[in-house]
Image 1: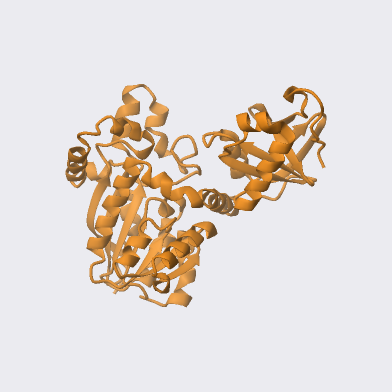
Image 2: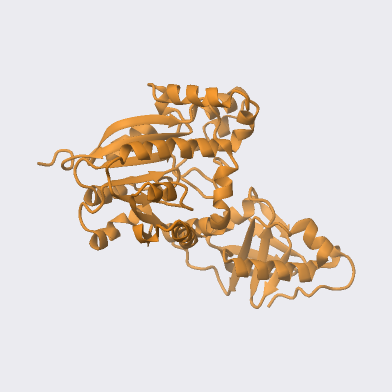
Length: 397
């Protein structure tokens, strides 16, 4: 156990902890919880939680002592409350209110004798799951509180309703908190929802129960890359349509696996709608390029795109429209594609859009019209593409 009892005197006299990084040492407030250490990040943009959660390992220095451990994001509401209570008890009401009362992330470091064994793909999956578990209860506000995020959902929901007209059983890959799930359930569709985050699935099931549509909802905890595991439960050609918008597909490094699994789950002619974070964003290329911020202008070209080069809290994989189309071509043919949005800013720059409040409706219409035209449909913040399942894999009889 690390000694951290509050001594008499000022906050400056509290025991000192430093996060040991290649770039130097970062002092942090902390509390001990048995053999473990709890840390709080006050700002979601703080880099240190991302660095240690990505690596799956952390080194801490407390006084003359150095310890290693495995970081875990605390996502359970009761555990979060307990952690903040420990910080309040240690730092006092004034210090707590000043530094820790609104934590963006709470990280538990499970202290061990040596560096933990890290499996990069597995670590990424655990990190991804924890980040979405952490925001599940507040995810709706994140969407509805941002006019560009609302625009994305309005466009995708309109396309989903058009594409799935007359279709009954649908597969949703990466349902999140159900921003599109619930409207489609209320339209009379049956939904099979997949998400890596158990807490997101809890939110979706609760919404379905409240709407009286729980009997039409089936959920599976899985990533998009593991869709093939659903085939034994669902059966070949078991769904009438599938979609994944603005998230799950950009957390996959191997889209071929997704295409192959969907090829088995969808019958010939069935629609598949994909909303994908684009590698080339006209607004960022122009805006950041003209101001000399070239690193940010071309920030989406990494593989993966690291936190800080995008607006997301995890590393993601951005795909250009030609690349994405090529990955799915053996099983799917293109029916429609549009940029969402292309002239308007991405959601993290929605403040620019807020300046045109009076003309927002006209700007939306203009953006929608331009986003459907070549070459603009390949340069949106996202592209929204509708495919149809081929009768067989390209080149197959």
